Length: 414
Image (cartoon, rainbow, N blue to C red; front, side, top):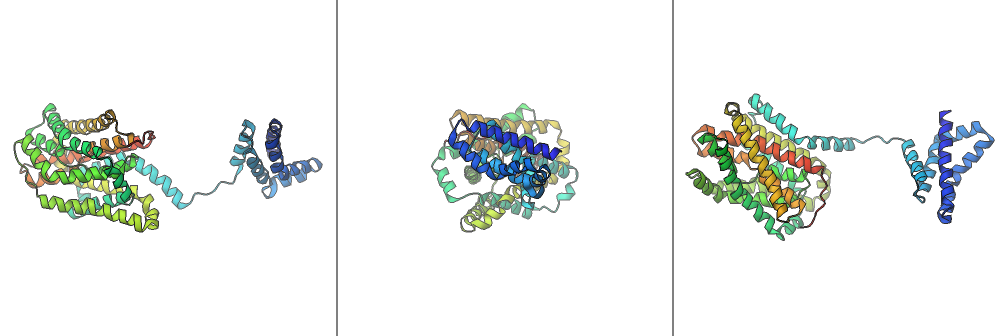
């Protein structure tokens, strides 16, 4: 009975569409012509109801009728035809999701929860640091390189050519990194009355280059990845001379920096993987398209491992630092992200560029700061702010990225 009722209701909807079609003769004729096979089944049903039911619902008869009705409804964009098409779609056999489609949906959810994974990996490293003892400096370097490679395969030389046509964005990002952030770090540390060692550590964080994880967050936030990579590369190269000068000016002491070592590390960790990824994108495009859907997940896992490794190395000191350092660090990165977005928008940069600069400003290479503190400051406590910053920098940047991921980019002017 229910099956027969469905056929009657859908037939009535088809008739209403035909009646409306008389207002416009040409579409009406087309509609009737398209429905002719299906309507003939309905006419047969008057002579033999049992045969109509068998024909309508047996051997996918109803589906054939609904398919014809849906195709016909295209020529009559009315409420009745829309309802008919919708009903036909609802009655269509449900297609099973493939394994890849299931992965795509799952990976989307995983990437959107990036801030949560960052916090969980940090918490695990804080209370079970031995779990990440295996992630030594060698693996740290490979992890950063893998992160860069996952971004490099999304780029092409034309992306960088477009960036070079608007160097003002790179320049503004450089000024943010080495003027606004160091001074703001010093002011934040003094405002929260941190100890001299903690002040030195936070200023060190403010005086280093942009973080490589910013490229991943820019990708998630629908920003300009090529611009992000250019800004990260520019500030990383600038760290060779800017970091020692800023530390001398703000802290009254020179932080020895191995310029050659930093330059080699920059080539190894940033430039080489990016170039390799771009070459693969150009000459191995089919292979790149096959692995591209896995890029965000790989980058996110690499970031979580990098964060956990830095936290695990000085977990006891972080636990003993108290909430004042935690709040100061959160405040520092959060305000940096807000200012990094608001000021470029005020300067008439595009929405995409502003998102990119906000993430670049908020996300410093705190792992590099942790390394410098370990090598060049005898007091162990100087390492604590960079280690804390690794966590809150990643949380702030990834949170901004996920929020922006759900906000459409309306402004694409460069």
